[in-house]
Every structure is written in C-alpha cells, then in structure tokens.
Amino acid sequence: MSGQGDEIAIGATEPAEFAELTGPAPSPDVAVDRRAARGSRQVVLWRHGRTAWNLERRFQGQTDIPLDEVGLVQAERAARVLAGLRPSVIIASDLIRATRTAEALAQLTDLPVSLDEGLRETYAGTWQGLNDDELRTRHAADFEAFRRGERIRRGGGELESEVADRVVPAILRGLEKVPPGGTLVVATHGGAARVALGRMMGLPERLWGALGGLSNCCWSVVGEARSGWRLLEHNAGTLLEPVIGDDE
Image (cartoon, rainbow, N blue to C red; front, side, top):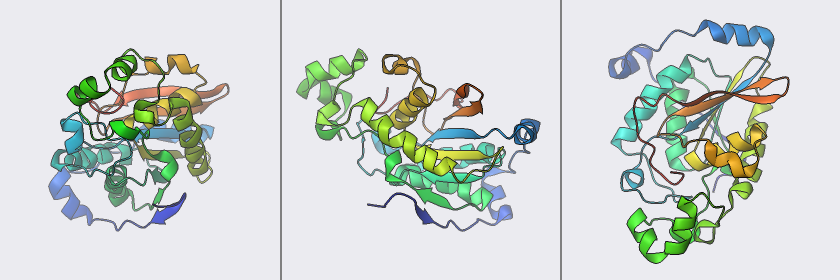
C-alpha cells in the first residue's frame, strides 16, 4: 500500500507520437488567465476511466481493478481537455485505475503524480466484487436502503461521512502545493469525489445525494470564492456517457 504523499515520476510521451494517437491538445482558455490574475485556485475532481467491473456493474470499492481498453482511451481523451487548464499539481488515489488515469494527464503536462491512499473509493466490505443482481439476492434489505439514498455501511464498510473525513484532507494536502491562481487535478473515484464535493461546499450530508454521480473519466470543478468553495462544473466531459459504478 502506498503511503500518503508518495510520488511517482511519469515520463513524458513524445508530442508527435502522442498526437498520432489523440491529435493536438486544445489551447488554454482565456478563463485560465483571468483566474490566475485573481489568485483564486480551483480543484478538478476527476473520476477514473472505465474498468471491466464497471461494465459488469460490480461494486469495486477498494478492490484494485485496472482500466479496460475503453477506460484507457477515455483517460487519454479527457487528459487532452484537462491539459488545457494548465494544472499546477496532480494527485491521485493509489488504486491503479485512478493512477493510470492520472498518468494520461501527466504525459501531456510533464508533471509528477503524487499518490495518496486517502483518495481511495469507499471501502464496501462484503459488497466488493458483487453485481447488482447478487446484491439484491444476498443483501436485499441493505441494497434497497442504499438505492433509496439511506446512509448505511455497505457490506460493513465505510459511511459516506467517514470517506469525506479522509478524502477532503487528502485534497487539502495537495492544495498546499498549488500556487495562487493554480489548478489541482485529483484523479479519484465516483463516490469519493461526490462526498468530497458535498463536504467542501458545506452541504448537509443528507443533501450529498443531490449531486449526481460522475460518469467514467468525467470531472467536477470547484473554485475558491469569498464564501468558501463554489461548484463551477459538474460531470463535465460526459459525451452522453452513462453513470455506472459504486456510487450510482
């Protein structure tokens, strides 16, 4: 298990070689320069690309499942857009699906990726590895409670508040390295991102479910404001992708 703040250096891919696969990266938006002039920072919460277990609708939790072929392409496509934000720092969950997603952006920006286990997905105990049908059969009452939006320990695992208790401090550790006007990109997981958004924006826990889930390799953006964190974008980059995964 990687410790908090472990750093891996990602070698840059040759621009011409990468362009043959994905085409040229987009130009930075003028909004980046305006934000830098104000000195306000922003945080991009980026869900990992698709995995085989996402496709099979299996609860992943903290099981270390890699991206599938579609997930790798999703990461490369999304990275081209996020590179246009000119990120200052990239941090990621140490689970391979998030780490590999972050690497796609690192290749375009020549930034290192700092791994933090605090950014992992919700631990879901005995639910991990089970699909929806299996959960309805083996854990019917708890599964229906979960689908109704009740706050339960899925499979005897973590509560959402406990996930927020570790994810938000991990984000703030990364933010310490971001200069005024800079951008922190956080490669993480759907459930982890949602509870972090709710906590950072000061929403009551009972309202966190109002934030819809993130599609694979899509992201939400919060920016610093006088009153705290403000939601700037949610589930951006969807391209009509469905939301599938632990946090549906």
